[in-house]
Image: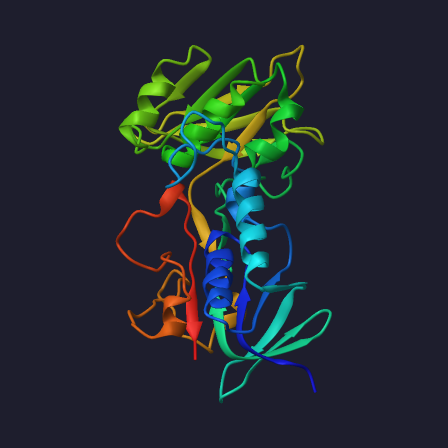
Length: 301
C-alpha cells in the first residue's frame, strides 16, 4: 500500500510551494506534485519588482524567485514528485490521485494547479501557435530579434511583456480593444516613455495567416468596424503576435468533484484550522492577484 500523506499539494507555483512550506513547518507529511516546471506562469516572467520582501535594487526574475521558494519548501521536508494527475477521488477520509506514473493518497488535498493563457480568439490562431503566435515573451522573444511584434492585451501582463519584447524586436505595437490601458499607472508611465512601443487602440485581431509562418493578420476597429490587413515587412517575411488577455484555470480534472464558478475557478472558504492555514493567500476573491497572475488553491479535507 502506498504512503498516506497528511497533505498532497497539486502544483508547484507560488501558491503550491507556499502551501508545501507551511505544511512542512507544521510537521505534516507533505508531497508536492508538479507536472512541469516549478513556478507556473511566474517562471516565464522576466522581471519582478513588486514581490514583498525581495531585495531592493537587485534584479529579480520569476525563475530566481521560484528557485528560492523551491529550496525553502525542501528545507522543511516537502517531498516532490513529477507527474501528471489524470483522475481524482476526493470522497472519504483518504483521497486518491491517479497519475501517469503512479497513485498517491492523502488525508488532505490542496489544489494549486494555477492557470494557462487565454487564447486571443482569432481565426488561424491554433495553426500558427509556435509559428509566430506565442503567449510567452520570455520563451520566444529571442526568435523575433529585429522583427516587428504585436502584443494583444492592455493589462499589467500585456504591457510588461511588451516592454520586455522591446529589448529584442525593433518595433512593438500593443493592440487593445479599448481606448486606454488597464495596466497600473506606474507600468503605463514606463510604457509611454518607451520609444519602441506603439499603440493600436479600439482594435481586435480577427485573423492571422501566412504560408507556414505568420506573415499577415487582419484587425478590426471595434468603433468604426473598419477591417485592416497588416502584412509583414517584405525583407522580414514574418512578424510575431503575443497574446496576454487573461488566463483559464487548470481545473478540468476536478469537475464534478468540487464546487466551481462559471469560469472554472474553485471558490474557497475562510477557516482558522491549521490545515486550512496551509493554503496560500491566492483564493478566489475580489482582490487583485499579485503580479497580475491568477493562481488558485483550495484545501480538500
